[in-house]
Image 1 (cartoon, rainbow, N blue to C red):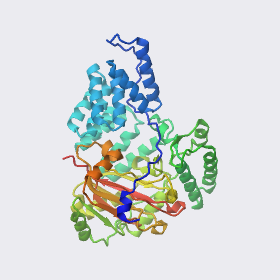
Image 2 (image 1 turned 120 degrees about the vertical axis):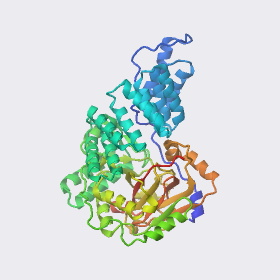
Image 3 (image 1 turned 180 degrees about the vertical axis):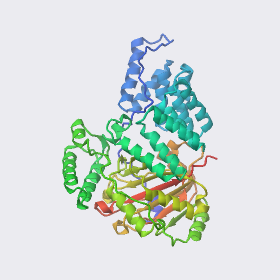
Image 4 (image 1 turned 30 degrees about the vertical axis):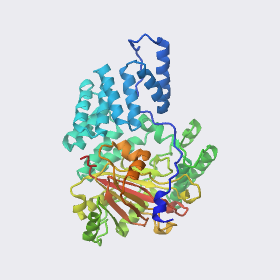
Amino acid sequence: MNESEKIKEVRKQASEIKTFTVPSALVEIKENISISSNTHSQSAKQEIINQAFKFHGEGNITEAAKYYKSFIDQGFKHHIVFSNYGAILKALGKSQEAEKSYRQAIECNPNFAQAYANLGNTLRDLGKLQEAEISTRKAIELNSNYAKAHSNLGNILRDLGNLKEAEKSYLKAIDLKPDFANAYSSLGLLHLQKHEHELSLKYFSESCELLRGVNNKEYTNKRFTRISQVKIKHDIEQFEYLASQSYDTKKYTQLAILYKKVASEIHWPSINALVLLNDKHINLLKDSYNRLLNQRNTSILKEEAVNNLLDVDKITSNYFDHDFGLTYIDNFLSSAALESLRQFLLESTIWFDVRENGYLGAYLKEGLANPLIFQIADELRKKFPKIFLDYPINQIWAFKYDNSAKKKNSSLKGINVHADFAAINVNFWITPKEANLNPQSGGLIVYDVEAPKDWDFKTYNHDEKRIRKELEKSQGNTHVIPYNENRAVVFNSNLFHETDDYEFQEGYENRRINVTILFGERSKS
Protein backbone atom coordinates (compact mmCIF):
# COMPACT_ATOMS: atom_id res chain seq x y z
CA MET A 1 0.00 0.00 0.00
CA ASN A 2 1.54 3.38 -0.98
CA GLU A 3 1.52 6.45 1.24
CA SER A 4 -1.46 8.21 -0.35
CA GLU A 5 -3.60 5.07 -0.21
CA LYS A 6 -2.61 4.51 3.39
CA ILE A 7 -3.63 8.00 4.46
CA LYS A 8 -6.90 7.98 2.55
CA GLU A 9 -7.99 4.65 3.96
CA VAL A 10 -10.79 5.11 6.43
CA ARG A 11 -9.83 3.70 9.80
CA LYS A 12 -12.36 1.29 11.27
CA GLN A 13 -13.93 2.45 14.47
CA ALA A 14 -13.00 0.24 17.41
CA SER A 15 -15.69 -0.97 19.81
CA GLU A 16 -16.21 1.57 22.55
CA ILE A 17 -17.42 1.14 26.08
CA LYS A 18 -20.79 2.81 26.56
CA THR A 19 -20.28 4.06 30.08
CA PHE A 20 -17.94 6.58 31.67
CA THR A 21 -16.33 6.81 35.07
CA VAL A 22 -18.69 8.86 37.24
CA PRO A 23 -17.17 12.32 37.71
CA SER A 24 -16.22 13.31 41.24
CA ALA A 25 -18.38 16.37 40.57
CA LEU A 26 -21.52 14.23 40.89
CA VAL A 27 -23.56 15.25 43.92
CA GLU A 28 -26.91 13.79 44.91
CA ILE A 29 -29.76 16.10 45.72
CA LYS A 30 -30.82 15.22 49.22
CA GLU A 31 -32.79 18.31 50.14
CA ASN A 32 -36.19 19.23 48.71
CA ILE A 33 -36.01 21.16 45.44
CA SER A 34 -37.85 24.45 45.48
CA ILE A 35 -39.35 25.10 42.03
CA SER A 36 -41.24 28.26 41.20
CA SER A 37 -43.06 26.68 38.23
CA ASN A 38 -46.46 25.07 38.91
CA THR A 39 -46.79 23.33 35.57
CA HIS A 40 -45.59 19.97 36.81
CA SER A 41 -46.31 18.00 39.89
CA GLN A 42 -43.58 17.51 42.44
CA SER A 43 -43.64 13.77 41.75
CA ALA A 44 -43.04 14.35 38.02
CA LYS A 45 -40.09 16.62 38.76
CA GLN A 46 -38.72 14.12 41.22
CA GLU A 47 -39.00 11.34 38.62
CA ILE A 48 -36.95 13.35 36.14
CA ILE A 49 -34.18 13.98 38.62
CA ASN A 50 -34.25 10.42 39.96
CA GLN A 51 -33.68 9.13 36.43
CA ALA A 52 -30.87 11.62 35.90
CA PHE A 53 -29.09 10.44 39.05
CA LYS A 54 -29.70 6.81 38.25
CA PHE A 55 -28.01 7.05 34.86
CA HIS A 56 -25.31 9.40 36.11
CA GLY A 57 -24.50 7.07 38.99
CA GLU A 58 -24.17 4.17 36.55
CA GLY A 59 -21.80 6.21 34.39
CA ASN A 60 -24.28 6.43 31.51
CA ILE A 61 -23.78 10.12 30.94
CA THR A 62 -25.59 10.22 27.60
CA GLU A 63 -28.91 9.23 29.19
CA ALA A 64 -28.23 11.30 32.32
CA ALA A 65 -27.66 14.36 30.17
CA LYS A 66 -31.11 13.96 28.54
CA TYR A 67 -32.85 14.07 31.92
CA TYR A 68 -30.76 16.94 33.29
CA LYS A 69 -31.46 18.91 30.12
CA SER A 70 -35.18 18.08 30.32
CA PHE A 71 -35.24 19.32 33.91
CA ILE A 72 -33.49 22.56 32.94
CA ASP A 73 -35.46 23.12 29.70
CA GLN A 74 -38.72 22.98 31.63
CA GLY A 75 -37.59 25.97 33.65
CA PHE A 76 -36.59 24.14 36.80
CA LYS A 77 -33.49 25.44 38.55
CA HIS A 78 -31.23 23.85 41.11
CA HIS A 79 -27.53 24.45 41.70
CA ILE A 80 -26.62 20.75 41.90
CA VAL A 81 -28.47 19.94 38.68
CA PHE A 82 -26.57 22.69 36.84
CA SER A 83 -23.30 21.53 38.39
CA ASN A 84 -23.82 17.87 37.50
CA TYR A 85 -24.90 18.76 33.99
CA GLY A 86 -21.75 20.88 33.70
CA ALA A 87 -19.66 17.85 34.70
CA ILE A 88 -21.24 15.85 31.87
CA LEU A 89 -20.71 18.61 29.33
CA LYS A 90 -17.06 18.83 30.35
CA ALA A 91 -16.66 15.05 30.05
CA LEU A 92 -18.09 15.28 26.53
CA GLY A 93 -15.55 17.94 25.59
CA LYS A 94 -18.10 20.78 25.57
CA SER A 95 -16.10 23.02 27.88
CA GLN A 96 -17.73 26.29 26.88
CA GLU A 97 -21.20 24.88 27.56
CA ALA A 98 -19.90 23.40 30.82
CA GLU A 99 -18.63 26.84 31.85
CA LYS A 100 -22.12 28.27 31.29
CA SER A 101 -23.76 25.49 33.32
CA TYR A 102 -21.36 25.96 36.25
CA ARG A 103 -22.03 29.70 36.21
CA GLN A 104 -25.77 28.97 36.36
CA ALA A 105 -25.13 26.73 39.37
CA ILE A 106 -23.30 29.60 41.07
CA GLU A 107 -26.12 31.99 40.18
CA CYS A 108 -28.54 29.62 41.91
CA ASN A 109 -26.30 29.24 44.95
CA PRO A 110 -23.40 31.72 45.29
CA ASN A 111 -22.03 29.71 48.24
CA PHE A 112 -21.69 26.40 46.36
CA ALA A 113 -17.95 25.72 46.62
CA GLN A 114 -17.95 22.71 44.32
CA ALA A 115 -19.35 24.69 41.40
CA TYR A 116 -16.56 27.27 41.78
CA ALA A 117 -13.98 24.47 41.85
CA ASN A 118 -15.44 22.76 38.79
CA LEU A 119 -15.68 26.08 36.98
CA GLY A 120 -12.01 26.69 37.78
CA ASN A 121 -11.06 23.36 36.22
CA THR A 122 -13.08 24.12 33.09
CA LEU A 123 -11.58 27.60 32.74
CA ARG A 124 -8.14 26.03 33.01
CA ASP A 125 -9.02 23.68 30.13
CA LEU A 126 -10.10 26.71 28.12
CA GLY A 127 -6.77 28.44 28.80
CA LYS A 128 -8.36 31.16 30.98
CA LEU A 129 -5.84 30.68 33.78
CA GLN A 130 -6.36 33.97 35.65
CA GLU A 131 -10.12 33.40 35.77
CA ALA A 132 -9.51 29.78 36.76
CA GLU A 133 -7.35 30.90 39.67
CA ILE A 134 -9.99 33.39 40.90
CA SER A 135 -12.77 30.78 40.74
CA THR A 136 -10.72 28.11 42.51
CA ARG A 137 -9.63 30.50 45.25
CA LYS A 138 -13.32 31.34 45.76
CA ALA A 139 -14.05 27.62 46.25
CA ILE A 140 -11.31 27.49 48.92
CA GLU A 141 -12.64 30.65 50.55
CA LEU A 142 -16.03 28.98 50.88
CA ASN A 143 -14.54 25.66 52.04
CA SER A 144 -10.97 25.89 53.34
CA ASN A 145 -10.86 22.10 53.84
CA TYR A 146 -11.60 21.35 50.17
CA ALA A 147 -8.52 19.23 49.35
CA LYS A 148 -9.31 18.82 45.67
CA ALA A 149 -9.67 22.58 45.21
CA HIS A 150 -6.24 23.13 46.78
CA SER A 151 -4.76 20.55 44.41
CA ASN A 152 -6.55 22.12 41.42
CA LEU A 153 -5.18 25.50 42.44
CA GLY A 154 -1.73 23.94 42.42
CA ASN A 155 -2.28 22.81 38.82
CA ILE A 156 -3.34 26.31 37.77
CA LEU A 157 -0.41 27.98 39.54
CA ARG A 158 1.96 25.46 37.94
CA ASP A 159 0.53 26.36 34.52
CA LEU A 160 1.11 30.02 35.37
CA GLY A 161 4.74 29.25 36.23
CA ASN A 162 4.31 29.98 39.95
CA LEU A 163 5.93 26.73 41.08
CA LYS A 164 6.63 27.84 44.65
CA GLU A 165 2.99 28.64 45.39
CA ALA A 166 1.83 25.59 43.43
CA GLU A 167 3.90 23.37 45.71
CA LYS A 168 2.29 24.94 48.78
CA SER A 169 -1.16 24.20 47.36
CA TYR A 170 -0.31 20.55 46.70
CA LEU A 171 1.14 20.13 50.17
CA LYS A 172 -1.98 21.70 51.68
CA ALA A 173 -4.15 19.24 49.73
CA ILE A 174 -2.07 16.34 51.08
CA ASP A 175 -2.25 17.75 54.61
CA LEU A 176 -6.06 17.74 54.34
CA LYS A 177 -6.21 14.38 52.57
CA PRO A 178 -3.09 12.25 53.20
CA ASP A 179 -4.17 9.56 50.72
CA PHE A 180 -4.63 12.05 47.85
CA ALA A 181 -2.68 10.22 45.15
CA ASN A 182 -3.19 12.84 42.45
CA ALA A 183 -1.68 15.57 44.64
CA TYR A 184 1.44 13.44 45.11
CA SER A 185 1.74 12.79 41.37
CA SER A 186 1.26 16.51 40.68
CA LEU A 187 4.15 17.23 43.05
CA GLY A 188 6.15 14.65 41.12
CA LEU A 189 5.48 16.54 37.88
CA LEU A 190 6.32 19.87 39.50
CA HIS A 191 9.72 18.64 40.68
CA LEU A 192 10.30 16.99 37.31
CA GLN A 193 9.80 20.41 35.71
CA LYS A 194 12.36 21.80 38.15
CA HIS A 195 14.76 18.94 37.26
CA GLU A 196 14.75 17.80 40.89
CA HIS A 197 14.61 14.13 40.00
CA GLU A 198 15.07 12.62 43.45
CA LEU A 199 12.10 14.54 44.82
CA SER A 200 10.12 13.76 41.68
CA LEU A 201 10.75 10.03 42.08
CA LYS A 202 9.83 10.25 45.76
CA TYR A 203 6.42 11.78 45.07
CA PHE A 204 5.67 9.51 42.13
CA SER A 205 6.50 6.54 44.36
CA GLU A 206 4.08 7.85 47.01
CA SER A 207 1.38 8.20 44.37
CA CYS A 208 2.05 4.74 43.03
CA GLU A 209 1.86 3.20 46.52
CA LEU A 210 -1.47 4.89 47.23
CA LEU A 211 -2.92 3.77 43.92
CA ARG A 212 -2.14 0.16 44.75
CA GLY A 213 -4.86 0.07 47.39
CA VAL A 214 -8.28 -1.28 46.51
CA ASN A 215 -9.85 1.17 48.94
CA ASN A 216 -8.91 4.19 46.87
CA LYS A 217 -12.44 4.82 45.60
CA GLU A 218 -11.36 7.41 43.06
CA TYR A 219 -9.64 4.69 41.04
CA THR A 220 -11.19 1.39 42.11
CA ASN A 221 -14.02 1.24 39.57
CA LYS A 222 -11.86 1.95 36.57
CA ARG A 223 -8.45 0.48 37.32
CA PHE A 224 -9.35 -2.68 39.23
CA THR A 225 -12.57 -3.72 37.52
CA ARG A 226 -12.24 -2.74 33.84
CA ILE A 227 -10.65 -5.32 31.54
CA SER A 228 -10.54 -6.51 27.94
CA GLN A 229 -9.54 -9.72 26.21
CA VAL A 230 -6.45 -7.93 24.87
CA LYS A 231 -5.51 -6.83 28.39
CA ILE A 232 -5.87 -10.26 30.00
CA LYS A 233 -3.92 -11.82 27.13
CA HIS A 234 -1.10 -9.35 27.79
CA ASP A 235 -1.05 -10.08 31.51
CA ILE A 236 -0.90 -13.84 30.90
CA GLU A 237 2.02 -13.33 28.52
CA GLN A 238 3.80 -11.07 30.99
CA PHE A 239 3.38 -13.52 33.89
CA GLU A 240 4.75 -16.32 31.71
CA TYR A 241 7.65 -14.10 30.69
CA LEU A 242 8.46 -13.23 34.31
CA ALA A 243 8.34 -16.90 35.24
CA SER A 244 10.76 -17.68 32.40
CA GLN A 245 13.13 -15.00 33.74
CA SER A 246 13.19 -16.67 37.18
CA TYR A 247 11.05 -14.02 38.87
CA ASP A 248 9.31 -16.16 41.50
CA THR A 249 8.55 -18.84 38.92
CA LYS A 250 5.87 -20.59 40.98
CA LYS A 251 3.95 -17.37 41.71
CA TYR A 252 3.83 -16.12 38.11
CA THR A 253 3.10 -19.56 36.65
CA GLN A 254 0.10 -19.89 38.98
CA LEU A 255 -1.06 -16.39 38.08
CA ALA A 256 -0.90 -17.21 34.38
CA ILE A 257 -3.02 -20.34 34.97
CA LEU A 258 -5.55 -18.35 37.04
CA TYR A 259 -5.86 -15.63 34.39
CA LYS A 260 -6.38 -18.20 31.64
CA LYS A 261 -9.22 -19.71 33.70
CA VAL A 262 -10.85 -16.31 34.23
CA ALA A 263 -10.42 -15.43 30.54
CA SER A 264 -12.24 -18.63 29.55
CA GLU A 265 -15.21 -17.73 31.77
CA ILE A 266 -15.77 -14.19 30.50
CA HIS A 267 -17.99 -13.47 27.51
CA TRP A 268 -15.94 -11.11 25.33
CA PRO A 269 -18.06 -9.07 22.87
CA SER A 270 -14.86 -8.45 20.89
CA ILE A 271 -11.14 -8.69 21.47
CA ASN A 272 -10.83 -5.05 22.50
CA ALA A 273 -14.26 -4.39 24.08
CA LEU A 274 -14.02 -3.09 27.63
CA VAL A 275 -16.00 -5.13 30.14
CA LEU A 276 -16.41 -5.02 33.90
CA LEU A 277 -15.23 -7.92 36.04
CA ASN A 278 -18.00 -9.55 38.07
CA ASP A 279 -17.71 -10.02 41.84
CA LYS A 280 -16.41 -13.58 41.50
CA HIS A 281 -13.57 -12.57 39.20
CA ILE A 282 -12.78 -9.44 41.23
CA ASN A 283 -12.30 -11.66 44.28
CA LEU A 284 -10.15 -14.10 42.33
CA LEU A 285 -7.90 -11.39 40.90
CA LYS A 286 -8.06 -8.78 43.66
CA ASP A 287 -4.47 -9.22 44.85
CA SER A 288 -2.97 -9.22 41.37
CA TYR A 289 -5.02 -7.41 38.73
CA ASN A 290 -3.44 -4.08 37.80
CA ARG A 291 -1.12 -4.22 40.80
CA LEU A 292 2.54 -3.27 40.86
CA LEU A 293 3.67 -6.85 41.47
CA ASN A 294 7.06 -6.29 39.90
CA GLN A 295 9.07 -3.16 39.09
CA ARG A 296 12.55 -3.66 37.71
CA ASN A 297 15.23 -1.50 39.32
CA THR A 298 16.62 0.86 36.70
CA SER A 299 19.45 3.22 37.57
CA ILE A 300 21.07 6.25 35.97
CA LEU A 301 23.82 5.24 33.58
CA LYS A 302 27.34 6.50 34.20
CA GLU A 303 27.76 7.07 30.48
CA GLU A 304 25.33 9.08 28.33
CA ALA A 305 21.93 7.49 27.74
CA VAL A 306 21.32 9.40 24.51
CA ASN A 307 23.78 8.29 21.80
CA ASN A 308 26.81 10.60 21.98
CA LEU A 309 27.62 10.03 18.29
CA LEU A 310 24.50 11.82 17.02
CA ASP A 311 25.07 14.66 14.54
CA VAL A 312 23.43 17.39 16.63
CA ASP A 313 23.81 20.16 14.03
CA LYS A 314 22.30 18.07 11.21
CA ILE A 315 19.36 16.88 13.33
CA THR A 316 18.69 20.42 14.53
CA SER A 317 18.83 21.75 10.96
CA ASN A 318 16.44 19.04 9.75
CA TYR A 319 13.97 19.94 12.50
CA PHE A 320 13.87 23.61 11.50
CA ASP A 321 13.81 22.85 7.77
CA HIS A 322 10.25 21.65 8.37
CA ASP A 323 7.70 24.47 8.40
CA PHE A 324 6.38 23.55 11.85
CA GLY A 325 9.27 21.54 13.32
CA LEU A 326 9.78 17.83 12.57
CA THR A 327 12.64 15.35 12.28
CA TYR A 328 13.55 11.83 13.33
CA ILE A 329 16.68 10.35 14.92
CA ASP A 330 18.02 6.86 14.31
CA ASN A 331 20.21 5.07 16.88
CA PHE A 332 18.68 7.43 19.40
CA LEU A 333 19.76 5.73 22.66
CA SER A 334 23.03 4.09 23.60
CA SER A 335 22.88 0.30 23.46
CA ALA A 336 23.07 0.14 27.27
CA ALA A 337 20.19 2.60 27.72
CA LEU A 338 18.03 0.86 25.11
CA GLU A 339 18.51 -2.58 26.68
CA SER A 340 17.95 -1.31 30.22
CA LEU A 341 14.76 0.57 29.33
CA ARG A 342 13.48 -2.34 27.25
CA GLN A 343 13.89 -4.76 30.16
CA PHE A 344 12.20 -2.31 32.52
CA LEU A 345 9.16 -2.10 30.24
CA LEU A 346 9.02 -5.86 29.67
CA GLU A 347 9.38 -6.87 33.32
CA SER A 348 7.50 -4.13 35.22
CA THR A 349 3.79 -4.80 35.79
CA ILE A 350 2.79 -1.19 35.16
CA TRP A 351 0.45 -1.53 32.16
CA PHE A 352 -2.75 -0.51 33.92
CA ASP A 353 -4.53 1.72 31.39
CA VAL A 354 -6.78 -0.36 29.11
CA ARG A 355 -7.65 1.54 25.92
CA GLU A 356 -10.58 0.89 23.58
CA ASN A 357 -8.34 0.46 20.55
CA GLY A 358 -6.60 -2.45 22.27
CA TYR A 359 -3.33 -0.89 23.41
CA LEU A 360 -2.18 -0.44 27.03
CA GLY A 361 -0.74 2.59 28.79
CA ALA A 362 1.80 3.11 31.58
CA TYR A 363 2.23 6.41 33.44
CA LEU A 364 4.65 8.10 35.82
CA LYS A 365 2.23 8.11 38.75
CA GLU A 366 1.59 4.35 38.43
CA GLY A 367 5.11 2.94 38.21
CA LEU A 368 6.71 4.22 34.99
CA ALA A 369 8.84 6.81 36.78
CA ASN A 370 12.49 5.71 36.98
CA PRO A 371 15.90 7.43 36.99
CA LEU A 372 16.87 6.29 33.48
CA ILE A 373 13.83 7.73 31.72
CA PHE A 374 14.45 11.07 33.47
CA GLN A 375 18.10 10.91 32.41
CA ILE A 376 17.06 10.44 28.78
CA ALA A 377 14.70 13.43 28.93
CA ASP A 378 17.31 15.66 30.57
CA GLU A 379 20.03 14.74 28.09
CA LEU A 380 17.72 15.53 25.18
CA ARG A 381 17.19 19.06 26.43
CA LYS A 382 20.90 19.62 26.93
CA LYS A 383 22.00 18.01 23.65
CA PHE A 384 19.51 19.91 21.45
CA PRO A 385 19.14 23.35 23.11
CA LYS A 386 17.94 25.10 19.93
CA ILE A 387 15.00 22.71 19.65
CA PHE A 388 14.02 22.35 23.31
CA LEU A 389 15.02 25.87 24.44
CA ASP A 390 14.30 26.10 28.16
CA TYR A 391 11.18 23.94 28.01
CA PRO A 392 10.75 21.81 31.14
CA ILE A 393 9.77 18.14 31.02
CA ASN A 394 5.99 18.16 30.92
CA GLN A 395 4.93 14.49 30.97
CA ILE A 396 6.15 10.99 30.08
CA TRP A 397 4.17 7.84 29.23
CA ALA A 398 4.53 4.55 27.36
CA PHE A 399 2.14 2.47 25.26
CA LYS A 400 2.23 -1.23 24.42
CA TYR A 401 0.30 -2.85 21.56
CA ASP A 402 -1.19 -6.25 20.75
CA ASN A 403 0.41 -8.15 17.88
CA SER A 404 -2.84 -9.61 16.52
CA ALA A 405 -3.63 -6.26 14.86
CA LYS A 406 -2.05 -7.77 11.74
CA LYS A 407 -4.95 -10.21 11.40
CA LYS A 408 -7.53 -9.49 8.71
CA ASN A 409 -10.53 -7.47 9.91
CA SER A 410 -8.90 -6.90 13.32
CA SER A 411 -10.53 -4.14 15.38
CA LEU A 412 -7.20 -3.38 17.04
CA LYS A 413 -5.37 -0.21 16.09
CA GLY A 414 -3.01 2.37 17.49
CA ILE A 415 -3.62 5.85 18.82
CA ASN A 416 -6.25 7.91 17.01
CA VAL A 417 -5.35 11.20 15.36
CA HIS A 418 -4.77 13.93 17.97
CA ALA A 419 -2.46 16.70 19.18
CA ASP A 420 -0.81 16.90 22.62
CA PHE A 421 -0.73 19.48 25.41
CA ALA A 422 2.94 20.40 24.93
CA ALA A 423 5.43 22.38 22.84
CA ILE A 424 7.68 19.52 21.69
CA ASN A 425 6.85 15.82 21.39
CA VAL A 426 9.50 13.07 21.40
CA ASN A 427 8.17 9.63 20.47
CA PHE A 428 10.61 6.71 20.31
CA TRP A 429 10.36 2.95 19.75
CA ILE A 430 12.24 0.20 21.57
CA THR A 431 10.97 -3.15 20.22
CA PRO A 432 13.56 -5.06 18.09
CA LYS A 433 13.19 -4.29 14.38
CA GLU A 434 12.99 -8.01 13.60
CA ALA A 435 9.54 -8.03 15.25
CA ASN A 436 8.15 -5.64 12.63
CA LEU A 437 6.69 -7.62 9.73
CA ASN A 438 6.32 -4.57 7.47
CA PRO A 439 9.36 -2.23 7.55
CA GLN A 440 7.43 0.44 5.60
CA SER A 441 4.78 0.85 8.32
CA GLY A 442 4.31 0.53 12.05
CA GLY A 443 5.50 4.01 12.88
CA LEU A 444 3.91 7.44 13.09
CA ILE A 445 1.85 9.64 10.76
CA VAL A 446 2.37 13.38 11.28
CA TYR A 447 0.23 15.97 9.49
CA ASP A 448 1.38 19.48 8.62
CA VAL A 449 -1.74 20.78 10.36
CA GLU A 450 -1.72 22.38 13.79
CA ALA A 451 -4.61 22.06 16.22
CA PRO A 452 -6.54 25.36 16.20
CA LYS A 453 -5.48 27.49 19.15
CA ASP A 454 -9.07 28.03 20.28
CA TRP A 455 -9.76 24.29 20.65
CA ASP A 456 -9.73 22.89 24.18
CA PHE A 457 -7.82 19.75 25.19
CA LYS A 458 -10.79 17.41 24.87
CA THR A 459 -11.37 18.53 21.30
CA TYR A 460 -7.83 18.45 19.88
CA ASN A 461 -6.92 15.29 21.79
CA HIS A 462 -10.10 13.19 21.42
CA ASP A 463 -12.62 14.53 18.88
CA GLU A 464 -11.53 12.49 15.85
CA LYS A 465 -14.51 13.48 13.72
CA ARG A 466 -13.80 17.18 14.11
CA ILE A 467 -10.05 16.67 13.62
CA ARG A 468 -10.63 14.76 10.37
CA LYS A 469 -12.75 17.65 9.09
CA GLU A 470 -9.91 20.04 9.97
CA LEU A 471 -7.44 17.84 8.07
CA GLU A 472 -9.74 17.77 5.03
CA LYS A 473 -9.77 21.57 4.93
CA SER A 474 -5.98 21.77 4.96
CA GLN A 475 -3.55 21.52 2.07
CA GLY A 476 -0.79 20.44 4.43
CA ASN A 477 1.59 17.58 3.73
CA THR A 478 1.45 14.21 5.44
CA HIS A 479 4.61 12.53 6.74
CA VAL A 480 4.71 8.79 7.35
CA ILE A 481 7.73 7.88 9.49
CA PRO A 482 8.15 4.08 9.35
CA TYR A 483 8.89 2.08 12.48
CA ASN A 484 12.49 1.34 13.37
CA GLU A 485 14.02 0.08 16.58
CA ASN A 486 15.62 2.91 18.57
CA ARG A 487 14.19 5.61 16.27
CA ALA A 488 12.88 8.83 17.84
CA VAL A 489 10.50 11.24 16.12
CA VAL A 490 10.81 14.84 17.35
CA PHE A 491 8.10 17.29 16.33
CA ASN A 492 5.97 20.27 17.21
CA SER A 493 3.45 18.74 19.60
CA ASN A 494 0.65 20.91 18.24
CA LEU A 495 0.72 18.98 14.95
CA PHE A 496 -1.96 16.32 14.52
CA HIS A 497 -0.49 12.84 14.51
CA GLU A 498 -1.53 9.19 14.86
CA THR A 499 -0.14 5.66 14.95
CA ASP A 500 0.40 4.12 11.52
CA ASP A 501 -0.95 0.64 10.71
CA TYR A 502 1.32 -1.97 12.27
CA GLU A 503 2.10 -5.65 11.78
CA PHE A 504 4.30 -7.27 14.43
CA GLN A 505 5.17 -10.90 15.12
CA GLU A 506 3.36 -12.82 17.84
CA GLY A 507 5.14 -13.19 21.18
CA TYR A 508 5.43 -11.06 24.30
CA GLU A 509 8.86 -9.61 23.52
CA ASN A 510 7.69 -8.66 20.02
CA ARG A 511 4.95 -6.30 21.17
CA ARG A 512 5.34 -2.79 19.78
CA ILE A 513 6.29 -0.35 22.55
CA ASN A 514 6.65 3.41 22.23
CA VAL A 515 7.71 5.96 24.82
CA THR A 516 6.54 9.59 24.65
CA ILE A 517 8.23 12.53 26.36
CA LEU A 518 6.52 15.93 26.25
CA PHE A 519 8.35 19.21 26.80
CA GLY A 520 6.87 22.62 27.55
CA GLU A 521 3.30 23.83 27.18
CA ARG A 522 1.15 24.12 24.08
CA SER A 523 1.16 27.69 22.79
CA LYS A 524 -2.28 29.31 22.88
CA SER A 525 -1.28 32.46 21.01
